[in-house]
Amino acid sequence: MKTKNYFGLTTKLICALFAITLIFSACKKDWNDDPIEAAGIGFVHASPGTGPLDFILDNQKIGSFTYTNDRGYYAAYPGTRLVGVSKKDSLKYLTNGTANLKGGGFYSVFVVDTLKSTKLLLIEDDLKAPETDKAKIRFINLSPGSSPLDLAVEGNATALFTAKAFKEYTPFTAINPSDSYTFQVKQGETVKATLPAIKIEKGKIYTIWAKGLSSATDSTKFALAVMTNK
Image (tube, rainbow, N blue to C red; front, side, top):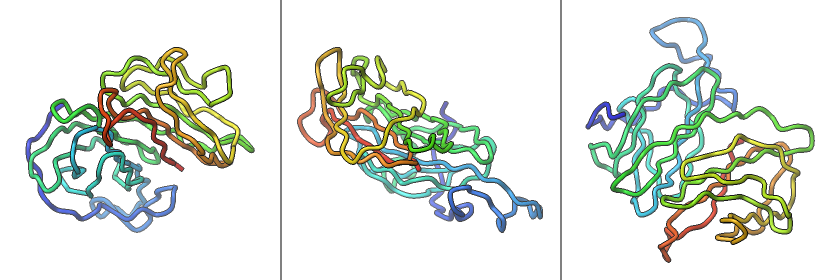
């Protein structure tokens, strides 16, 4: 939902991020002495063919990022917040919308689709610790125009996740750690892309996502990417 067309260039962050729990002990809203439990919000540039972007929270520019760039989590006050992106150093939104943030919650905002139809995909991230001696992963299909995709591990007969259409995603799911996984994205039995030699560490949480365009041969070509959520 579009809400505003322009924003200010203020770059002051609301409050500093304090460890992964995101508990504000010093920052106070409206001079209230009670500590505020912040939300964590991260932005990921997943729009192939779109140049560098600025990301905005409540009409304030927070930072810039390029294609496939993940800037980690930022601290934000809970409540209904305006989020959006613009072309780098522009004052006009490419797209924006609202996000309802819960104190203590974590959220990822993916900038998706191509430049002419840029959208935001907001996902709440469940960062509860994996089971003992496990890691967790999820899969998101962020390849515009793609058919439903499966994510598999090379050498395993059964896919980890199946039939995810564009902008569909899985919950975080337990996986055994390994020093060298080769992940495959498939359409049926056909391997469309691989992500080799990926280390999955015990206790960590990851997102693997399909990116790019099947028709491209440059840096925006169809492929897999991985990021560490925690």
